[in-house]
Image 1 (cartoon, helix red, strand yellow):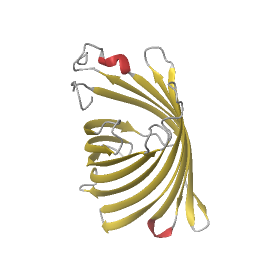
Image 2 (cartoon, one colour):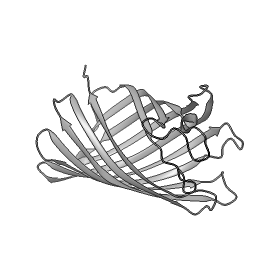
Image 3 (spheres, rainbow, N blue to C red):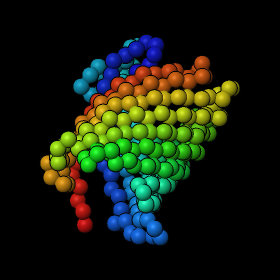
Image 4 (spheres, one colour):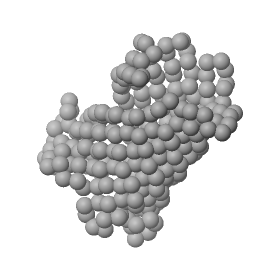
Length: 239
């Protein structure tokens, strides 16, 4: 959980999402795709593992929910270029009393380029920028305001008509300009592997593993190294 006084722990993340995404329609030389939706996530600690941290405190005391309302738009240019923008509103709530302790407005925009490597594989390169305008329950209330710049590259390989493998790498630079006596720069390198098996065009099973390494130049902020593994079963309904 932390660099010092390390405690073993487990984290379960459960999500439910509803979105309205009309079929892309032609605008000028490309195609335009709007989308709007709602996402709710539950983060629970200590299930299937130690229930207390070192020092005796219950791990599940930090269980929380995140509610997200979002709207986005994507424009697909000729020659496999895509530009996109999104606006999110996020609310963080404690599961103990459902008190709101953090909110943020997050506008973002980016570009992506696809390269056809073989008949059954694609290389994707993307660049995204965003800004988090935040409020926290503890003063100074805007201490988590920050800007992100994200570079990502992934390779999708369709090994069989039903099985897809996708290794990826992502670099994220984050600049906090309000939460420290010195400006806080953070650098995160993430890489991993995602696999997906499609039982039908609508039903799929995905598994993933990843590694994230975070560094910062602020001595008050902890560095961390996180390994992630997970799976999800998805069913898509088209109408």
